[in-house]
Amino acid sequence: MSTTSTVETQRSGMTGWVVFAGVLMIIGGALWAIQGFVAVFQNDVVILGEEGALFLNVTGWGWVHLILGLLLLLSGILVMRGNLFGRTMAVILASLSIIVNFIWLPVYPVWAIVVIAIDVFILYAVIVYGKEMKSA
Image 1 (cartoon, rainbow, N blue to C red):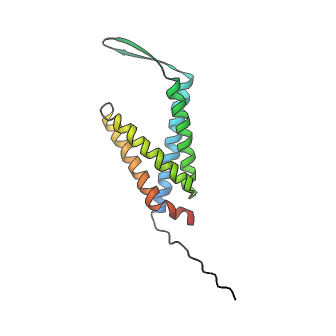
Image 2: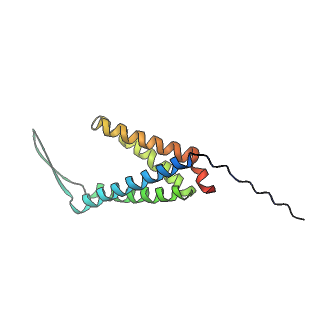
Image 3: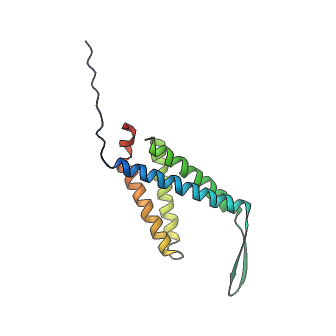
């Protein structure tokens, strides 16, 4: 006689918020990747100011945006599937985004605060309730 015990994880209503965080990551990653494509293919930027013109080549930043955007998109898909690697990447990328936007706070205060708030939400949803997605 074999006894098997199955333990089922009770899912809470917060799994919907984890899916929402995953969707935010997919959309943000896609936009970040598009921004990277634009920077790679249209790499010369001219900034006009009172003291003259500043010519920049943003190809390097374009590749960084493209790669990180694709990682974020993949991470969002994996988070919605309940994957541990996806949750780990979500934590790393959202934390990195918080740090970067904190640095940009003096330049774009409203936008930086909005992105930081979204990243904090993603961190909370993925860390606290992300494991419940695996039991789906």
